[in-house]
Length: 202
Image: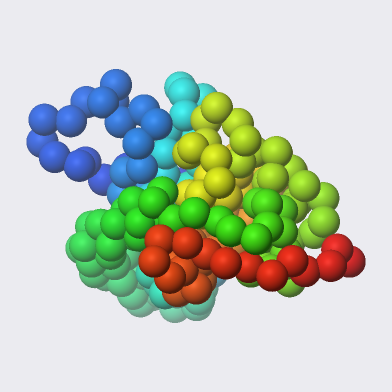
């Protein structure tokens, strides 16, 4: 856009993989953001994305798997960013594999005590609007999401709802909230289940 740039790079799962093999299955992703109008520093976030079809995907990552470089003037500014990007991309594959494993665990983690909207209010309610929560709950029931009633379906619902946001920075914020939900949800899970007490709607 005129305000910024987002580029997503899928990391090859293995040398024999072809695009048709990865539809509907999370694969490692590196996302690069930049804005030269002051909205964002240069940043690299590692995560995963799921290719839905030829024109859509949902992605998520986490702040713990991110690198950023503030724009600075001078002759060494671009060299500093280029060197940092190279180091970050080298670390990305191992980090993304860990996030993939977390998503596999989330697909086996049932939600108990509340529906998806209730889980979102309890875990990421301070990061989302009520309208975003409602759209994510609908997305969690989509045929493009993981089977219902799991942490993975809630994460998928958020990434699908993020595609309806008006700009790339708003999409990024909602997808990062999905990464936070993935991480915090697994921390709260015991014996393959997240038990959540209902939280009143605002």
